[in-house]
Image 1 (cartoon, rainbow, N blue to C red):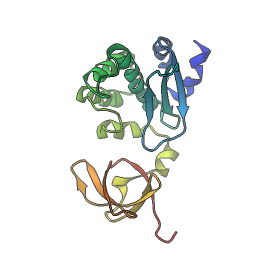
Image 2: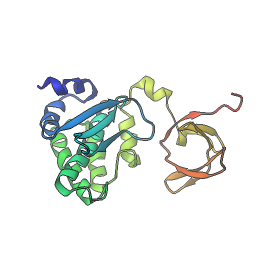
Image 3: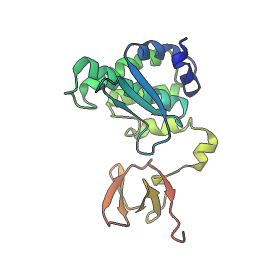
Length: 207
């Protein structure tokens, strides 16, 4: 096992690093373990100005969420390499690559049965990410550390009219419209559609 990728082992489910190593070694790649970001789990940046492909993944994700996010971002790399920059970010080409790079991990039974089923269904639905697929995200969160899960608050947990802090802005929870909640930003009066599983902080008006 290459020491270059050995640091990833503590972030990943058992057995997955051996499958990842040949993928990550195939391209010039800078892989970064990022600090927690509430707006995304990871990202990909294509090569430019002499820099290699760049992927970052949040280091606070549970092992299964970390792996799926890494595969998601790696699929962007493969799609870019095979089809060029002119494709849609999460179009048919990326979906094809995501399914292709994920297949070996599904066949190796890396994921628990319930999560494997949810992941397969998500791939079939073609969701842009685990963050936009409510069903997969709910299953993934079952594998968060217990202390972490207890400390988290999601928009769907709040009562209507509750105030919460998201991205350093204060919002008031409104009614649900289809899949998201219509929430008012107090400072501007503007309304935003907020994901029900967005992680937020309860805002105390006395503060």
